[in-house]
Length: 437
Image (tube, rainbow, N blue to C red; front, side):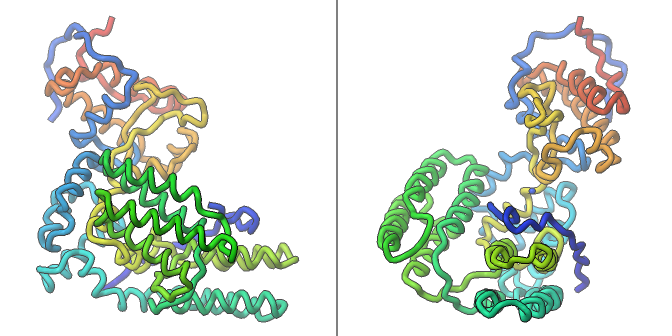
């Protein structure tokens, strides 16, 4: 099977800040505007997400987050792989990139194991992708080992312990790793984000209660804190078991593994590039030579990420239950409210500054100025035109009137794009035959 080639990239390697913590309708006569609801509410735009609006940056038909929520609540991704493949097929035009490759892989394996769920499908092929990924990782680990051989014995010893743990994680053999409150928090927040996306009120209440309890954890684990840490995690487990999240596999695994680590027990922990770089940075910070610090970290960040390397992506998803695998495949294509002028740059929370973009594109843009975004996404004007064309279609289909959405949003979007692009992008909305005077 041919795999995508990883495109390696470098990051800021200041180890002190390295890691501290995505049919047009024509011939319609001019109409008099009808009174509609306020245009100041992003909820109005989210309603339109249910009508396959194209992303203004990629042009793909976006998936309404409410649809994903329904699939999760119905436990649709826990069904046989064949059934799940049919779900993915219904979003065929929306799934692109590595997620599309993943769907193809699941589809191929489902023909061999039609009764497997998608977690079982990926779990079976882990050894192949593990071996393939290690071909890329090995030379980088070797280079790091070579560099550390010339360093003081104390630093070498810390690095060797880290590499011994890393080797066991890669091989998926039990390893004794001390409990880390920071790591626990990081994973708990990830779970919270997933639950928030699912929009289940009862689940949100439970995870918020668990986070409140987690705040009681001491930041460091030692003889004077470990007893209390055990007590906090045990109580969190009790809350979980008596709640709607009792069957949440990711949360259950986090708490059970944490309890084992607090007892100094050996557990299977998958290799994490982020965790490795974080632990390496702590060791590297003890080196006096800043140039050498940067050299080591520049080497480490060459380790392939799950967003660049397909084998790394397979291994990351294989650690998840079927429900999370399905959600993660669809997540990058979910519709999200994009602030055309970012909030960090003074952008207003109003419809005239809102657009629809996939969660992936929204996350990638961050606070980049729109003119700069046009350079990064040169087809953006074409996709923005597709966006307004679809909005005009929906207006004439009665969608705006049905949901009391002011069609002036279409004009406002055109004008905002015109201004933010420095008058370079002038969208055509001539098919919108409405007199707003």
